[in-house]
Length: 327
Image (cartoon, rainbow, N blue to C red; front, side, top):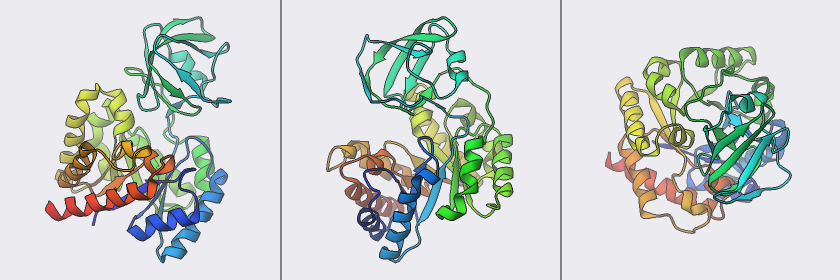
């Protein structure tokens, strides 16, 4: 049976909402720790426990680790960027989460924010401040993901913040971890060692393919994870966007040949963040992912931020049932 997950967030963190999703048949929830620590989310994990009791089920809880992800720092308020606007990062501008991001910027470098929703290009850099021009605008919020196409910043697979969260995982009912930007066996060996250190060797490991390196090497490391995650947000930013469908099909084929489960995530029902019904393309996308052999599907902003989270879960489950029945 295809597993289905939704993302915990402000729009769905009440017991009544969570229990309604679980009663529909949702397998569990993902908690994105790029924006906060696991202990910061205690109110949400307590609500999930209560919702599981109310629904008579034991939901899975996946924590999405930070790993080597690149992100903005905290902003005092969201900013509206428009095409042609100038924006600064660093000493004389907005904060980046880590200094090595600023150091990696060069004039001409493309900078994609929030899974490519916002596109900037670096125009100048004096070592302390980078000046960028907005190519594609939108609402800029703190802690959003950054992609620098063609640039790799070496980082450990498991950060100190990840270790802190893993130390608290048992107390919050965590059943799985999701590792970002897996590119090699060494990345997953580091994850497995971290889990061993925190007595979490029994939890499920989801390994994300999010860039060209991960795509090129997935066949070399998939035996070290339980589920390969086709993470279409960053993957669609790090590859030319029109290459994404082929990449998804390629990963699915590799997993099928190896007998490895895979999960598809990002923009499954993106329009339902605002709209009460999905687009025809979205339901077709989910159905095709099922026909390709997906073992799991996951919603992100649809439930974490969306206005129609319960209905989005209902649609996801209905399409999963139909797709599984027809494959």
